[in-house]
Length: 131
Image (tube, rainbow, N blue to C red; front, top):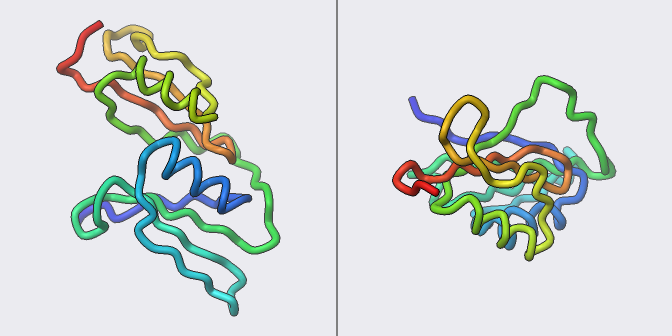
């Protein structure tokens, strides 16, 4: 078995695609409309689906907002430098909601950003770098 993808429902597919591709640097791997079901699926990631887990962005036509509830946590991305990643994300129009710094009760450097729908993305600095 292997992890294939994580699905997120999004309210504005264009805004979400811009965030995941331009702001986070992922690639749009495929996008398909399903007119009979009135939804669109877009898959984004850092490499081909054959070798990498990806994110499935699901846009249900006519639905522009979801209640995220309190069960969802976050998606984690490894970065070389969490401080620089926050700067790049902020300059690209992204929303940093927890600045880079050591996690509570530990030394791993982390940060959090929100996607356009409010989903949390954790940035975890590669362990080889210490600030």
